[in-house]
Every structure is written in C-alpha cells, then in structure tokens.
Image (cartoon, rainbow, N blue to C red; front, side):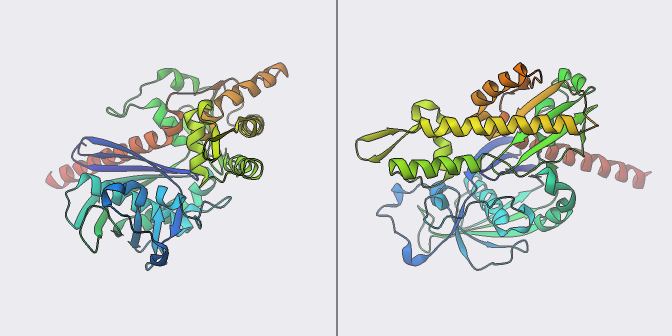
Length: 396
C-alpha cells in the first residue's frame, strides 16, 4: 500500500483541505476556496522574486476535459483572496457542475506535485487513488458523474512562478488512475473510528454506541450535513441542508466595514483571526489605530450556535432510523470556531429538558479529509485484493 500515491481533498465552501500520502510521505494543505480571473494588464510585477511566496501567488491555466473554459488564467487560493474581483462560493453551490471545483482541485494537486518534484519545467504526477467529498444532498445523484470527470490526465500550467527564468512557467501533468467519492459526515465517522496506518478500528466505544445511534452534525461554510450512524453504517435518509457559517461571517464583515471603516480582503482573512483566538479579534483601519471587533463576532457566533442546535434537534426528532441516538458529534471547522457558543447554547437546551450533549472530537475540523484518506487506502487495498483473486483464478 505504501508504493502508491494517495490524494484526499475535502472541498469545503470556505477551504479546501487536502492530505497526500506519496509512497509513505505525508503532506497537508489548506487553501481558501477562492478564484479570480488573472489580467496581465493589472499584474504588479514584483521587484524581487525572493519577496514572492509561491503558495500566495498561484496563477493557473487548466487544460482538462473536466472544465468548459480552457483558455482563462486564474488566481487561486490565497492569491485570489487578495483580488478585488475574487469569486467566493455561491449559496447552495453545485460542486460537480462548477468549473471552480476543478480549477482549485487540480491547481492544489499540481502545487503539491511541484513541491514534491524536482525543478524541471515539465512534471508528471500520478495519483493512484483520489478521494474527494460531496455534501450528502449532492452525493447520491452526482458521485458517478464526478468520478468520470476526474479520472484521466489533466494539465496545469503555473504562470509567473517565482525563482525560475522567463517565461516563468511550470507545466504539471496530473494522471488520476482511480477516484472514490465520499459523503461529508460519513467520512468524518471513518476518521473518528479508523486508524490511518492499519485502517483497523481504533475506537470501539463509538462502534458500540452506534448500535443505538449516532448523529454527526458537519457544520461547514454553506451547508450543514447530518449523518446518522446505526450499527456502524451511515443512514442515508438523514440529509443535509443549506446553512453554514459563511452567512454569519459575511454579517461580521459588513458590520466591521460599516462601523470601523475596515474592509477584509476575504472571508478567509476573518476566519484566520477567528481561528487564532480572541486575542486577535481586532482590526487596524488606520496605522496605530486598533479596534476591538469581538462585539460583532460574539453575537453572530451565538446566533450560529443556536440555529445549529435547532437543526440537530429537528434531525433527531424526524428520523425514524436514529430515534434513541445516544451520541451527538460536532464536526467541521465552523463548529470548532463556535465551540464555546455551541456549548453555552446546549445548556439552555438541557434546561428545557431536551439535552443535546455534544462531543467535540480532536481534529474535528479535518475529520472529513482524514476519513477520505482512509477511504482512498481502503479502495486501493480492495482493488489489489480483487486483482490477486483474479490472478489466482487465471493461474489455477
């Protein structure tokens, strides 16, 4: 299993979280879900290439059967987030149908290939197993089409690459051999219960609790996915719905802009402050002027927490398959950001006689991508076992 390359990506509405496992070597990446059209006319050439961080200046051109427009150049990730015309995700976006999904995905995989490879102008990177997620609302109908669009060879051309001679381009060919698509939330359960190395069970207590029922609430940027687990298997009838932290992030940005005269470059800039903790909850609209913005953040996180628990209660009340569930698990980067407010809101639910005792697991913000990596390895193992059986049958 260690002789293959695995690439797992949780394509969130705020961030793309990726894990790679290349012949035994692990890597991890997080980039904002942001793209922006590149325009040569407005490009500011750096005075010195040494001042340019490649990750923050990713400009890509994608040639692939997966996308419609193969001529445009795009800023992606942190580079896009700094642009005035940055394109963020739309509410209830359809990931399989949008070019941005493939632009960001292939761009991120190619960036990893550049870091892993030598400094040649043409790099080939083979992904034996690509594991990728979809919200539960899109998983059933879209997973087959998604897989077909991802398998094959995709070319990524990086432009304005620092540290190399003109024309400052790097060509990366990504060869995707096999794809497995996982449902958000269900992947988090895999990440909770399976070991990354052995793929065996690492938490028997959760397996035992699943006999009565487990509800996982995966809170993301624009969606919350509830997955019911019964007898160690996902319950398909528990669907997600369009609700997430981005609407509350946008409210904070608008209030800070209006009242403190400070404009965030992007959602990711504010999210990085939230992740850093309350000591970083300030802005500097002018040099030497520091403004506390916690008065805008806390009410929005409280509102998010309240609505999140309301949806948890609705799901546990409406699903016959997981009535009597004994364990509720909060998952996702947004749930981690609002952990304190969710815990405070849960006290009120207990006072009403309808307790929602949530578990906040370690690495809750990346459980989906951890589960996807396990899914990729298990899929490769299954493939090898099937090949061995076929070989043995032919030989006999």
